Image (cartoon, rainbow, N blue to C red; front, side, top):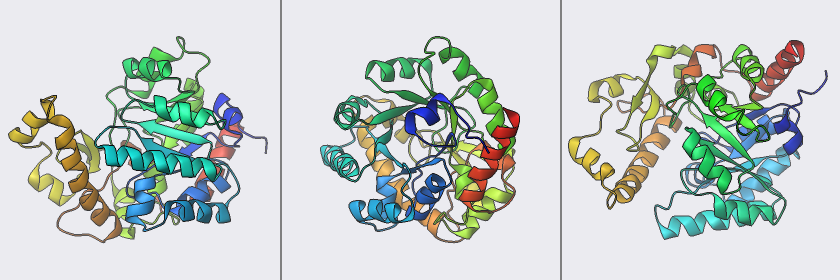
Length: 330
């Protein structure tokens, strides 16, 4: 079977243009390694690796390396919520470079320091964007590619469709690899994204419902059984609209933050403090919901790609099936 070649696969030296997106709290060693070993690229989420799964960061990277020698990536959240957080993230980037990681996915801020630091070692940086204005800014900062987060994504979804994002960027930045992030749950959607003109896809929801993912089986089954209309946006978790499955708990408490919280989030002086509060609170909630079985207070992140997920299976099987589908189509 011939490889699926795109600008993205050529740039990273991988076989299949599939990213296993970084997920808090679902990115564990075995999942990251499985996707890379199958020919895509798994992304390490350091907060998940260290604080959810209890790994020393360097030791966790080496455990991944014991499972695959193929390229892996690292997620770098560059929002300036605190100096302590920023310094810790910078330290993790240095460790990742020392351990041979050369692909970095940035989000939620200015990625220029990541570009400057990683380019010294031949690194490649892609930035998550939801609008053309953020794409322009990220490219001005020197990133090498863009993950185009659309309105069907899980987690912090965008507001534009995959088609709208592509049409606003492809002709203006023809040399920039563009990744479709959101709405891809099966091989049909994967092939369609490539046919539209994307250079690859980033998936999260599909990879939660896998045997390698460390999340609780109840969460995985909820994804399998969910329908597209079961995905709702809530700002009660992080202060920013978050795509989650509509559980009984979500339905009971509603999806809007209270008026005082909304006021603080709109204020330039208080929004970062409020987001830090939400981060600390939501980290505990999402970790509990992901790793425990059904409880009375569940927040399960997922995107509208649940429509294409009909079973729990291995990440390796998913990547290989996608590769075969693309080979037939092209």
